[in-house]
Length: 453
Image (cartoon, rainbow, N blue to C red; front, side, top):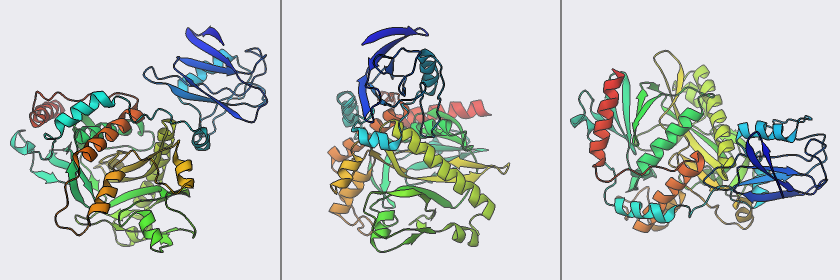
């Protein structure tokens, strides 16, 4: 193993076999890794080079698919390729600017690695805070009583919304919903959802505009007012789910055309679809109903032009989300989006993006093995809590539901934090318990609204 300096960066050179059809993998904790064929000069003929800037807090997997080629190359899932005769050092600089591991889904699934997903990382530190917060979750808010000029509260399943002139103040609580009802309260859940959405809002502006104005508090987003389309845009990449509108539920009941999408016979639960599909549902206070694009237009819920624009944006957002998730060892399985129209006529993404509440995530490394054995995928979302309620009651019809076990709630809180930190690459800053959370939110919202005047 040799070490060189390239553009001021310490680079470890690791020899791998040339002309091999097999893939080689290494785990590193250094800043950069360069993979070269034995006996080849750095500026001469080389194998394919995949380089990845390493996260200082954790090791990433770098992979090299060896092949005889006429120079270094690297690629993203969009097959961006650089097949030039540049120096290896220059290739490193170019690849580092991408900050990606250059792996497609098949490479990750066959590698047997977990990427950066580690369900035990930071658990001892965070578990104490979760346990202490079990009895002090943010379940209700009353900002109209503590912040001047706020309108009355509109209470959703998870979010409390207040009008403030041209803006909406959205407070994400710790309420946990599924099966169209609240199941439990999960410590720090509201913060995780809000900060996850803010991160994705900022990362997806190249696909669509959004309503985000500012996030003055870990649990709060202030957004532009929009005329919200009465449709939720659910995008799916796999045949899975346990709710009445989930794709596996309806498929298992014999349905072969869902929301205008034909489904062929012979699919198994949790199988990957040939392509991502959009399965919209109408928004309802009681229960969401699946609907096709044609029905949306025929019922006057949206114009044909607006629906087509949202259709395209939703699929593009999901494909981008899958790409980002995969780079972090995760499969984005399905999700829902909401859109609205601003006063200037532009269509904006609203509400939340790719959160563990609106989305289903599986761990990529173990998916194929578990699928071949008929096992449920390792998930990192609220699906295991759904399954517990399905196994212990009838969550759709029982008037009173059993309390979820504390250890299950604590585990869900932990998984939400793991998902946020895995996707964003940053550690969540858990708030101090010295100041009551409602007082903190009231203070931060009032200051933000004064600045927006």
